[in-house]
Length: 189
Image 1 (spheres, rainbow, N blue to C red):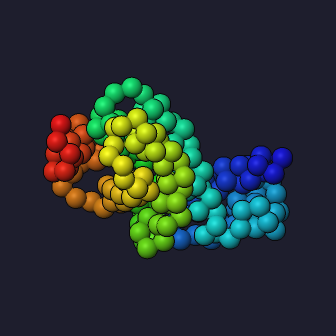
Image 2: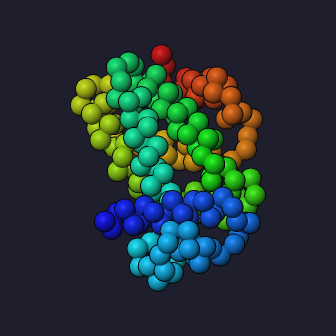
Image 3: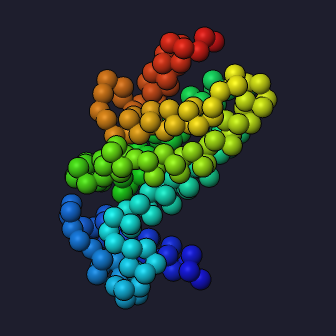
């Protein structure tokens, strides 16, 4: 019941954020759309920053579920790494709310992916560290701290999603070539 209510509030928040102008305070609109009171929104999700973080965490979990088959499929670690990064970047590229905010008001979301990214990285660590530990156990990786590997991947993904550069992240083939070249720097084929 609590998860259903929180999910309904977060679904309403997505709709309200998509319809609102950048920087709008939308607690009342979220409450109205979710058919709950404003105090209920605060009780189950929190203030607007907490809503944003809850949406980020929920969407990271959804993204993980969508790409877990890529992470766990047979194949070389290198290929799974490239395929996973491409899938995560594509997921972000197709995420309507993230793209709206990055386009219209990037300053409002960039702190969540930069100076306040610890929560996002912690979520990534919780989801992907078990996969890296398994790859180490299977002999696909040298014995290294899996947290370092996963955090590096999270930082790479955050940078690719939020920072314009010479790599066209909207072109999966170009992104794949970039990642292959990046790996060639330190991981020979």
